[in-house]
Structures are given as C-alpha cells and as structure tokens.
Image (cartoon, rainbow, N blue to C red):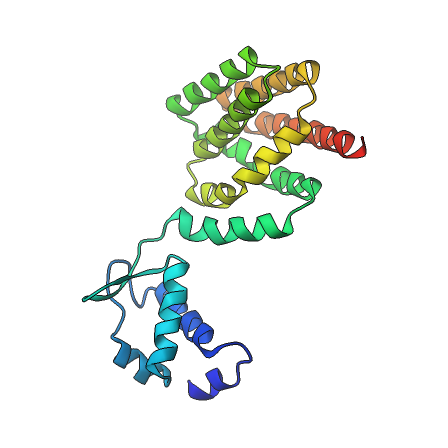
Length: 233
C-alpha cells in the first residue's frame, strides 16, 4: 500500500480518498455505516493521521461521507447531488459550445422518448399535457415557454422510470436552459416547435416507441438548426 501511494505524483491524501471511495462503491462500507477509525485507516493505508483527515475532507466535499462529530465518519446514501454537483461545475467550465450539447441531447433524448413510450404512466402523461398547455398559451414569452419546454422534456425523462437518466440529465439543467433561450426564434418558430412536442407526446401516449424516437429526433434536429442560425447572426 505504501509503495503504491508514494509513487503517486499527486497529493497523497487524494490517493487515499480514491482507495476509500472505491471500497465504499464496492460495498465494503455500506451506506449508513461508519468508516473505520482514523487509527485503523492509518494502519491499513500506511499513512499519517493528517493524510487520512485530508482524505476524509475530500470524500465529505464529494458527498460520499459525512463527519458526525463525536461518532465518526458515516457513509451516505447515494443521491443525485453527489454526482450532479461536481459534473455541473465541470460542464460550466468546459461546455461553451451549445452544438456539442445538442449532440449529447440527441444521443440521450431520442432513446429516452422511446423508453417513455413504453413505460409512461397516467401521471406522466398528465404532466406532459400541462407543460404543452403552457407552451400553447405563451408562445411569445421566452421565459414562460422555455420553462414549460424544460418541464416537458424533464417529464419525458421521468417517464422512462430509469433513475440513471435523471442523474445524467440533472447537471445539464442550466446548459439546457441556455440552449433553449439561444434557440428561441420568436412566435412563428415557437408554434412549430410546440407542434413537434405535441407529436412526441402523441407517440408516447399511444405507446409508439419508434414513432416517439423519430419525433424527438426531428425536433432536436430542427432545434440544432435554430442554434446554427443564431450563432451565425
């Protein structure tokens, strides 16, 4: 253990944090249990208390553990924020090209629409209808329309009944909003986009997975063209 850590070029405590996190992920220390004591971790890792304490701070900031003063370090339940927060920060720093975001959306959301058609519930359909109603009522209101647009796609994601889809999409929220605002092209285009959403909805309602994928692909393709038009003006 010592030789492996000493050969690392980055700070020692980060390697210790990686080793502990791997053990947590592997289930060696399940959620709601406590990590071994500092002394035990020092002995197991072959490092000092200072290194262990710094490693625990890294794990706490990433949402894997919580330090309960007087009790120890508790392993936390897996939750969206522990994944979405660091990913959201990374995306904000590196994703300046909305066209790249559109490529990601097409990869994820086309398949997502197909799953939604197969698994949607009555509640999912009602929520999509509510979002469509707002889109019809506020075609010229960029803020109101965009909020309803985002909610429609979010409900399609929820209709997949796949929690991993929600985890992946959660940190994209801010970037997705930016792409909607950037591609908002006024009343005429918005009405066309609303009809496309209605087509996606109808396929999902009927349980037509191939149709839902095709309708979503057409919608995202046209949205991508809108972004190209905006960026060139």
